[in-house]
Length: 220
Figure 1 (cartoon, helix red, strand yellow):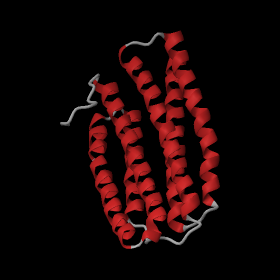
Figure 2: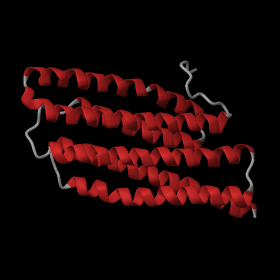
Figure 3: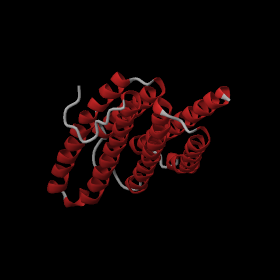
């Protein structure tokens, strides 16, 4: 019985990691398509959404079944509830990647406003945050979770920088407004991806320490 229970928890962990890998790949390909102006890549991102949605349902069902049949307590219960919450954040990261493709659908049919520099940087940091948050989850690494949360400020600063720069383009040439606003939206979607990675880290800290740090300004 105990061996089966361990296998169920291991399978749940693997599903969460698989979903995390998918949404990271969606984010990477969506931004890559935009930067390299390869509209054909967008279809690949949209196709992956089906897999993410299926995993979203499967993970929740697995969590509910384990809770119902095994009645976990203490650390195991925190692990399972963290998996359910992380599952939701991962699905929303997938949604943000789809939102980026929708902006790219338009941006790749018109001349570029400017070379993209800060948006790829934002994407790189957001993807790193996602990978590290999942590593923290799998290894129960509280310190890595805290370190990852701190990187969110870098994404926020880049988003503000993107907005300021694009604002100057819009003010100097009204013909750039629609394209610039689409890029602003892309930066906001990347910021939201980083926010979801932060949420995952908060869940990891609760899972490992039973400590709720949401809505707290100060981190150790």
